[in-house]
Length: 200
Image (cartoon, one colour):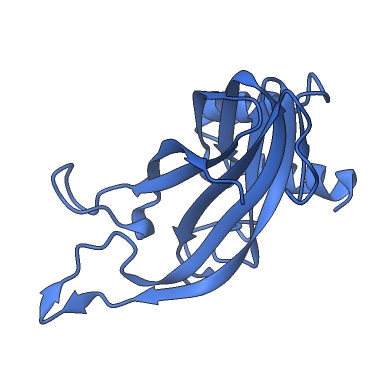
């Protein structure tokens, strides 16, 4: 994807964040790279050089379908073919589009309402990218321009090892903080977990 197209997508997505100015400003700033030497995308098939580690970044989100976007502007990205994720590691930024697939789980099981936050029909987007980083501690920023959300975590990786950094979505509650979360209400936050993976 060309830089011009990516910038256009960012402009649309950030335009949807009016009213969420602080988050929009942070996301806009973090979408600009201050460095280009922090990480490189890799297939993982190349030999791992000394002093480096591989990290597979995974994140997903489920949104309503495009036909259910009646309350959103025409430029809204929910329910469309791709969804934009922003990753910034130590000042190096990348924008990745994750493909979407229709996803449906039953809303009721044995006559009772499902407590699964992804129950119902929607569009699910799954991001999975592998990057190569120098061993050490790194600041990882993940932003969702379409949902004016971001979070930042620190990770530490060791020389010669492989990891999975997984961002698990927690959705907003349908009624009260004690109620069950639902993807139809949008993302509340990501819970992040870094785990070591065995290299075969």
